[in-house]
Length: 102
Image 1: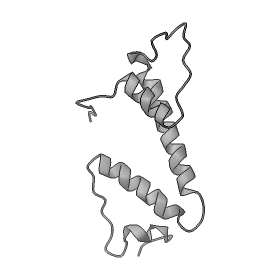
Image 2 (image 1 turned 180 degrees about the vertical axis):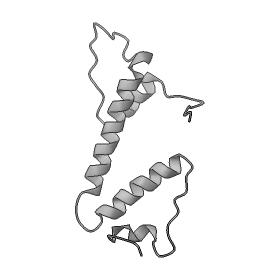
Image 3 (image 1 turned 45 degrees about the vertical axis):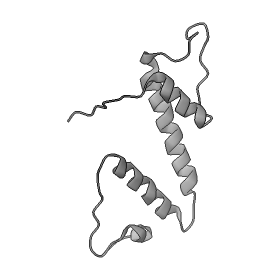
Image 4 (image 1 turned 90 degrees about the vertical axis):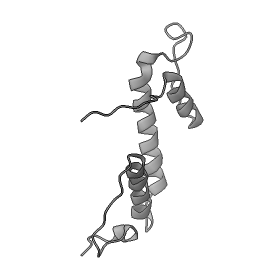
């Protein structure tokens, strides 16, 4: 399986996304005087992924709506990849908070 992008995000774009989330890493001006470089992309993507996961976890929180929020996060991920989730006829997306669907 190959995963690629026609328009991969640059290090600067990923850094900007982190900055928008107030999570940009501090770069050492001695080693990165012009900011992030292309070889920084994997680490920046890892930081962005961690920030997104932490934000989703904080958003879900606890309580009655936790599973619905978590389901929406998963649905957003699936929609990004063009996958439409299928549910058993006895189970709807809003029923995810039930322990099991019959």
